[in-house]
Length: 495
Image 1 (cartoon, rainbow, N blue to C red):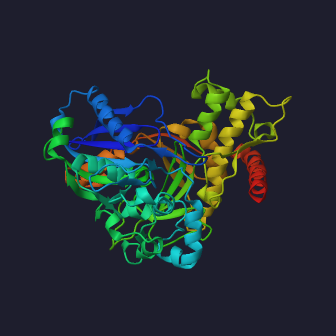
Image 2: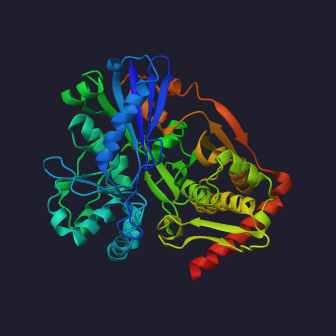
Image 3: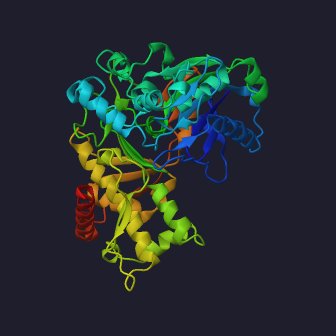
């Protein structure tokens, strides 16, 4: 039998068809070809229409089955990975109340900061492991405060993946990992976080029933079984935010293991088994996919908003006639340090790593008679890599010392300049593996539905395609460039 895995990002939806018996990917697809629109009604806002996500789910499914002769009716398990921290609101008739407020929207920063101070920083950190910050709960509080008429029509709130699962099953449910990423989970009680819920004045009826990550979370509705052609017994049996799922897809499940990704945003994600938190909130801690009441597995997440988005901005505005492989060649033609040019990639809203400050992106030291496109490309790649290194330093304080970082074979880690910069400055070996978030979602679905007996078999065929190691001969040059970058960042933070 087959599993299908969806990875709902803010740019596109990816899908994979997975054979649960042979443990092989049978087809993969993504849609749309160009990035999905992110609406910004005001500066630093970011919204998307949940119905657009659902329409793209339907279209990517059609595209997926155009690439295989497998029978749709053999799909018995559905897995959903999704962009984290978003807020979807539904009426009691299951209609969307307002556009989804997505992960990179910064409107709730002050709402969360106020809650952090008034509830008490230590109380928040000891129970939630995080500040309420700019996460889902604070976004809902913003709606309550600023759009009361709309708020009063809300019957249920959910995360983006919960919405997709609901559309398949007509069941409104969530997971402990999902609630934790919204700062709606109390890790001491292993239950809905009543402290923050009461502080914001939310009715507990707003929150869906909690289901395990790997389990039957809902049976496909008769209408959707017919529309998609899946088995009438198909179930949604796995659901996780994109970063816990990315780690899962790389077989990162145990304490000390670390995964990374460099998509629209950049993430380093490590697993611990203790209730640890970063008092400075440079990194955040959430329930990992295999976290249970009996066995703690927590994901420590470093998120940088401006990674692939920064590199895409540079290409689209300064080098639209070139592809990314050509940009890589340009970057490699320039020495480490980009001829003294420094780039801060923080131009995509508030940065959690920088205490939710909005500092913007900038080139520092640009000279018109000295620097060319190649220098700017090199500086961009190095600046994004330096932001990873800067964040990893904060993770080390929580006991995560990366010797190996596992990554997928896509996005920023296809760049030798980018990956080697991180490897050299952290001392970690970077292993590039042939997998994707959609593959992880499909494997998780098969396991959650009982079609896959153990995960060791499912991950047995994972391939290491490439390894990046530290460039010992240029380590001093990398360190000098990084120190210069840190100085520029700290100067910007003080201004």
